[in-house]
Image (cartoon, rainbow, N blue to C red):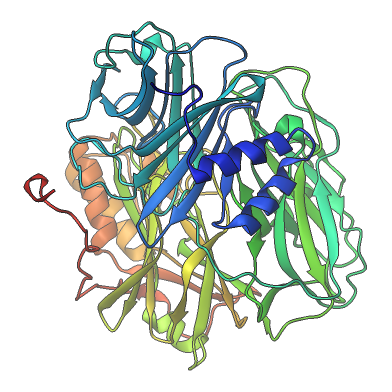
Length: 602
């Protein structure tokens, strides 16, 4: 007879003890215990209360993820619970592992999928493995299962890969005779959470003997009962930084009652003169009341997103901060995601910086790759997948990178609201090398600086091509490149050492080619464009059709470039950077190998 509760796997037994410990200690302590106990355990809240939680470990040798999901039932009766994956966080067209109790009281798990109408069907191939379940204290149901990165079920299963994963979950009632035919609309509760499942697992780095922990925290923010809030807080660093220091680590500091709503955070340095005073603004980031002077607070020092562990610099490098010309003002930006419109929340979460006067062998640096911030690059409306690429060409790296090269160890991909995918290709002498970073399910609402699985050596003469995909199906007008959140960007901020003079290696379409394009549209298409008009006026004067959108994409692909090969001072490196040819990949890499067997061989 089936025991109740069922016997637990070693993984689950350990977690049952760990969860009991949380009654007395905070989650950060739990995570440190988990890391010491064996495989690195990652965690993220599933709902805005923070009571439903997902934990996971990654087994790179067997290319699988083990999930432990804690569903807070609040005393309610549920006959089925589901955790799944979808491309953009939708419940339709998703891949679910469903735990269910049938009408006889037998508990099991099924690999399922949903169609465009939200109807659940059982997959012919079952890939939710090593299932276990238990009830633990506080009305929480915990279930575990293992899922391969690639199940080789291309028709129904989601491919777990580097970058963002949209987790979707549901809970529903019964009694059930079968899972087949259930509807998403019949779920009593459901939600979505973005995480990065496949994190880089690099060797642990010991902190220096002398290190200061600087907490950059929000100050008792009354979180609005709105789905999305970006809150900015300008402050002065409470540390003597008159001499150069290094940031060697940063991590989140999240208040317990805010775990489900603090979605991501960034710390920016205010790039101003050492003696310049900044207004100590505290309020919505995009408010008209925000002082214009704080717009200089835009150099990223740290970026965290939900589920991210501490970001630790390599032991030989640190991010330089301080010095006689350093301005001590910084700005914290917190994205609160509050889909439940919870009221009365007060939050003081933020980011902890580890800063040391014991500077390491190398200064780390940041290079901006991708597209120049300019309205010359634009995305027509009603586009499902419009593609733009920004180039860091070989001529720029040849004059700016030393013969020994630079080692890139981290990356922060960035677009605004319409970006859906972003990646950077690495090219040497026409040969494509392994990609520098990729996120096939990118969301601007989930940004963090991510460690690369392996450092990437970039040599002089290498080229780096950053490509962004955009969806503007819900927009009626052209989307221009620029700084506003409704404008667009395509950037990869790469973290590397040793620090060099190069800070910006980005491109845009050459002025000459763009003027020729506007002239052609006027003369042959009778559009309200002219080489003499401002770029934004020209783009807004075009009546966009599918054909004109395709032509614009082709123009971008075939045109010469205007290059920004810039030092940190904003000056370009010597050379002719106008009308440069774009990088061509002559020899592409084969697709990654897959270990797939035919069903007949199993």
